Image (cartoon, rainbow over all chains, first blue to last red; front, top):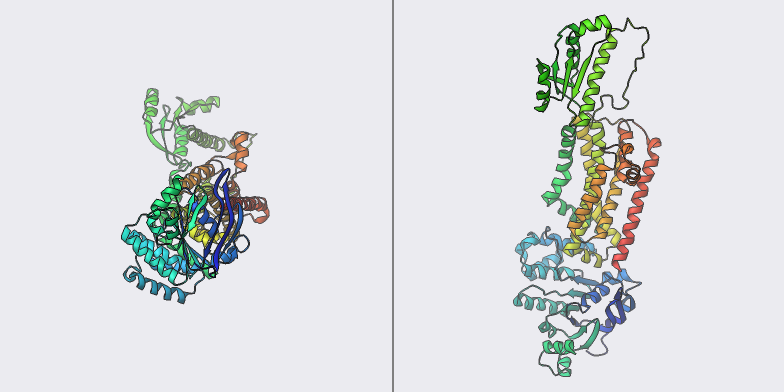
Length: 244
Length: 367
């Protein structure tokens, strides 16, 4: 990543405390426009806390944060307009059909009816979901739900999409397909901020940060990290870091 | 505005695709009304009695006729001996027994005094009390009509039961039922629908979107305002058609007050959903914390005036109490806002209080 590419997320000294427990301890990092940024860490390392703060679901205790070029304290609404979010539960409404879900999420982002119809048509075609358009979400397989949840999260063409453990619970083939979708989105210019605890997925990212106990223990490209820690895979990098 | 419309449409999909929700929304009011109207009645009708009449003269027969034609009592059997009284009560059908003394008419003629014994089954004390009152009332009426020419000094109480001349239980149940059902539908349903989004994880998605939290809450609550309002109308119409529940006052005022009450209950529902993330807990809180007090402490079934002081104080903190006062006043007494403005203000105060508290709680959660 060259220095000429502008930062789309800037975080300086982010601290989040729950009582006396420090979930995020002075996090400082930048995400560059258009990259796939992996946010790694063990369960409870503070990944979800940080992603929630970046999405505006939770307030930081202190620190400077700018997302999509807007200040997270004073320009919340503008931040929200420019981000997409997909939670680890692939949250969609079970009792609505595929199309109704798309229409609803398009609607709350203020998309016009025409746009929604056009984009959902495109989306179904791309996913091969045409036959499932009017099926209830509860009747479609988990892998489809995951793809749909991601598509819905980027339906309004956000600058950044936050993915909170988007590949939990699906099979390796579906996971691979899902990463193809992520690449496609990145190719379209959407910055991808993804948390995961699958270390093989870390290899797919442009850069990764690894959190241990609320702190960022390492941040670089996967290749540089493997070289630095003299490890054959990201998995080994992670184990070395976590044991240190 | 368009966003809001889409949101409300989605909410209606949820409601109309879930038959349980529909059942609660539209089945329950009708069923409850029937239950309370027909089953939980404390009016006396056709209570079975036994009569032991050893004298069998004109006077005793006339008294028995009066009692049996009153509509309150029906003759189960005539007793032949005093010994039959005890077994007849033990069988459980007979609630009251009338026992005339022998030579009733003769004694009355000669000494001006004759005795009737009234024996009641007091294993249900309220019913026994009412039966005895009805029976003695009929007897004393008869006595008054009998010697109206003879006795110079008489005090005859002219009783008039205002607003509910026939002492119909429905007049009490319909307002209470409105208070209970509107509370249930508004508070339970909204708290369930909001916690459901939390359980599904869709609430996070909504909060990440450009929609403001207040828009989300209003969007979720709006359909229930509408549906609860329809329910209020269903109860009023059924109550009127089936049970003859009057609406003496302004229908518009009645609906406006119901709307205020619905808003109060909805804000309670929102408050509940800020306290918990699970539908089950929300349901428990709604049922236990809201329903029981609504039934027990609102004056719905049990008069507040007869409770211990501490409970009375507690009753004053129950919003349904004020709603029941208001709609009784409008429906039965035909009063206008001039008579219920205080209760209306209290209800509005409760609404504002619950809303403010929910907003505060909501903000605390977010941080």
